[in-house]
Length: 98
Image 1 (cartoon, rainbow, N blue to C red):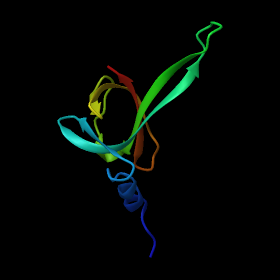
Image 2: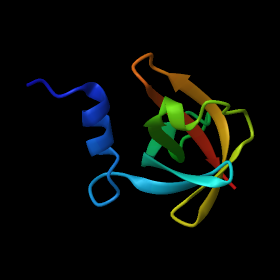
Image 3: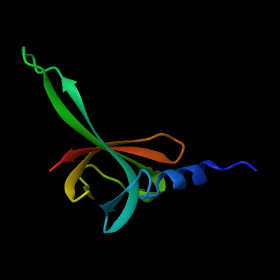
Image 4: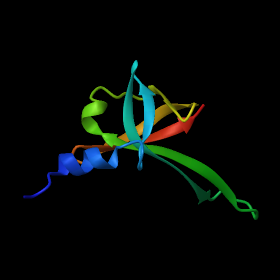
């Protein structure tokens, strides 16, 4: 018996494993939060790094996402800056720490 992608995705979004609870749009959704630090070219000699927080979640959990929406992840406030639906039911949301 084959396991569906929806089942795999549900397993990935278990908060005991990979996911975090996210406060969004008056409720709670689950997503995988990543806050990678990446180098940026600031035109100087000294290297500069910045955080690039993002959330990977089910597209169905954020059907009316909009620029500037608020999310709270691990007690930190973020604003939505961009998002990419990948066509498989998964969306990556780019965030900005407030």
